[in-house]
Image 1 (cartoon, rainbow, N blue to C red):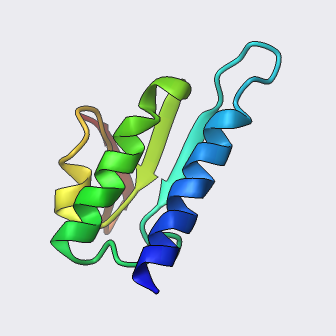
Image 2 (image 1 turned 180 degrees about the vertical axis):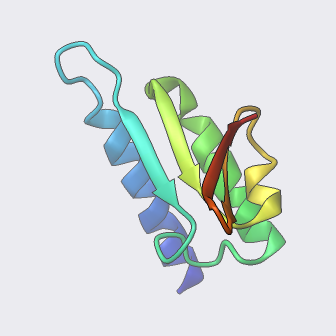
Amino acid sequence: MARRRRRRRDDDLERAAAERSHGGHRPVALLADRRPFPGHQDAAGRERLISAIQSVQNDFDRILVITHLDELRDAFPARIEVTKTAGGSQVRVV
């Protein structure tokens, strides 16, 4: 069952890459770590997810990954970190 979900996720990424040519512009991909990626909670699942994202990175202008997982966050060189404070959210580009 996990294999099917993994394949479905990979298919979704491939489909997004195939649909990327809209007037010559490369689209932006947005991925969130909540429910769309079953199995990413364990180390092997996170590695597969990171590998899948990296395999299509050249097909997109940007890939935005929203995550609370340090290992997933740290897999990418540039980040926008949002921190909740008493005075409101603080945003920092890393």
